[in-house]
Structures are given as C-alpha cells and as structure tokens.
Image (cartoon, rainbow, N blue to C red; front, side, top):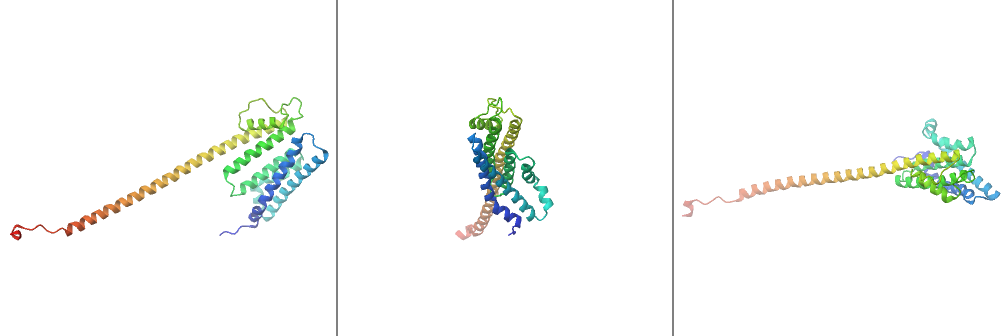
Length: 253
C-alpha cells in the first residue's frame, strides 16, 4: 500500500474543518445582506469572521506549499488557489472575498476523491444560487433604477440566469451585477454540460457492462455446447462398442 505524503495527510485532515469554516463564512456573508440594515457591531463581527476564514485558507495554502516536494510545480498546478488567496489583498471588497472563498472551497472539494461528481455538481449549483443571489442583492438593492430589491427577487433572478432562461422581469443595472450575471450564465452552461456528459457516460458504461456480460454468457454457452457435443460423441462411441454383433443364420439353427 502506497504511503501518503505529508501534504496528502494535511489535506485529508484539514478538509472537513475548512469546509466547516466555509459554511461559517457563508453565514457571516449572508447575515448583513439579508438583514438589510444591520447594526455596526453585527457588521464588524461578520467582517472579522470573513477575514478569519480567508486567513485560514491562506494559511492552509502556505502549509501545502511548504509540505510539497516540488514547490514550484505545486504553485504552477495550483495557480488558481494562489489567485484566490491574493485576490482579497488586491482590493479588500467583500465580493472579492466571496469569490476567493468559493474558489478555494471548490478546489479542496475536487481533491476529495470520495466526493462523487453528482454530489459536487449539486453542491456547486446550490452554492452558486445562494452566493449569486446574495452578491447581486448586495450590489443591486440600493442601485438607482434597480429592480432586484428583495432576497426573493435575487433568488429568482439567479435561478433564471443559471438555467439561461432569462425572463427579463429582473435584471442587474450595475456593472458588478452584470459581471455576476455573466459568471452565473457561464457557470450554468458549464454545469449543464457536466451533467449531460455525466449522464451520457453513465449510459455508455452501463451498455458496456451489458455487452461484456452478454459476451461472457455467449462464450459460456458456446463452451457448454462444445462440452455437450464432446460428451455425445463419447457416449455414441461407447454405445457403439458395447452393442453385440448380430447373430448369423447358422448360429440360430
């Protein structure tokens, strides 16, 4: 059995705590937006939680770099993780911290081999719907001429945007809101492609298993048929040698 490296052991041990921190981040991000007019203490507490979660992910990335055998190769392979860690420092906006946390959670989820594709897709859809709704509500609620004022409007807009239906009854009017719309549309198309490919792959694998089983049964039947023929030939040969010769006329007299 292959021994796990220090980096793999670290990733396995920290996977659940980081996912739990991501859930805490989601709550801290959602509370001020859903509340609409939170108190100063609530805003400060939620902001502190968001930065603590980001710090945990940044520390996790640093530890993984230190534990990697080839650090340069690790950085090249995980450049998206590095961008997600640096992103909030470039411009400390809550939306950027949201994007970076989503990227980091997604990267760690894909590293978990026990998470199946269907579970990952379902979690991604739910996460994008939730965070997309909160993000667009935070930038569109107070925008002049905006028509996304409530959480219900935001959820409905996110759902129709991700499914590329686009009824047009609700639409973002700000630049950031439109960028979010582009991201949700592209994510919806990508997830639809993943689901379609997964279903097609399942059918193909199922048909292949059926074909293999059918070939196995056919080969078994052919082998049994050959054995039966051999047995019949042997029985016929033994029966022919055991049949007495017909009695002649002289012997009968």
